Image (cartoon, rainbow, N blue to C red; front, side, top):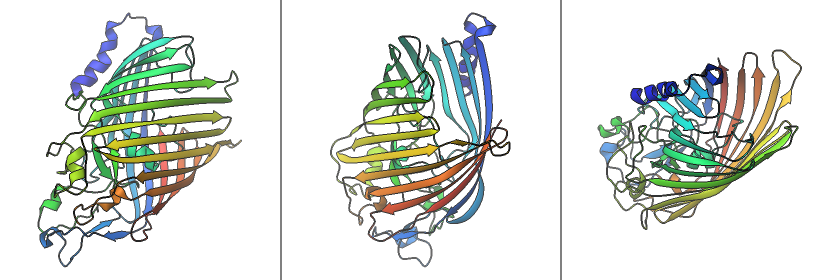
Length: 431
């Protein structure tokens, strides 16, 4: 990684030394949280041997990762950017702490580069439009093409968690045709298919303690859903190369009071069937090995194809911001889809200490068109249908800081009623 960072920041020196065209920026961000998560438990029918259960317990459970009230530091990160006009750009986003990304929560790596990439050529952001047609090439670790441009809450919806929350590693090219129409093509490693709880903490699955007799870890499994997890490493892996394509259209009026960005996308790759543990901190496998479960017959699979397609529309109208997204996924013959709608309205106040408030609401849903045998697979939550409602308010504070207060409510088609609600308060400070 250190070698890649060095290349990222010394490569620009090969360009003509016209310092007036160079731009360098840095930003440090800290997020401190208060979290109140309701306790919920679901008994499993999977026949765990007694040695795999806590002493005195005869049944295993899916249960809340870390119930109760907690104060914690969730994010400590630095962002570095260098650019030379619209010819070249380099970007690093490195965290020394990002608790809500980690999976498993207790044993995943503490430090990581969320994004690290080089780009040649102009790539307008969201509603920005170039003067004419353009083309670019980007390489490294970068966000999904369809990812939500601006998040109004600190939590994530079900669709964003399941499909596009995490970055991928590889190459992407694209450009604009005229000022409004744009296109993307990419080849990447492909995010492994894994599982996590959809609340703030991912949960502890496959940690070292579970290999000991009668384990009783402090952090529990959560109620995991399938999701595209973070890629390991910063180099392109070609074993199961993922190809992606997208086409989009953006528009904004001259007064910049109304605009939208719409994109349709598609990804496809083969899934790994290796019985190994490629993710940091867990001995569980990914892709087909995960779906087969410990008995290799938990869910009936057909083939090894992984394919996703969908669309996302981002809109701004004065103080109103909204995002609508839809994704349909096929994984080894299993089908599922997710939808999400988020909207918020920023109200500017003539107040030095509270310059703005932004109430926001998000509805998200996840439908799984498959079902496994709970006596053969130990995580039945991966096939439950699910909806989640998040609502809250972001309060602007002086010096580029803000406070977000939000509440999550879940409606899950589980065999018994579960209350997995969570309250999250986030103080964000940016320097």
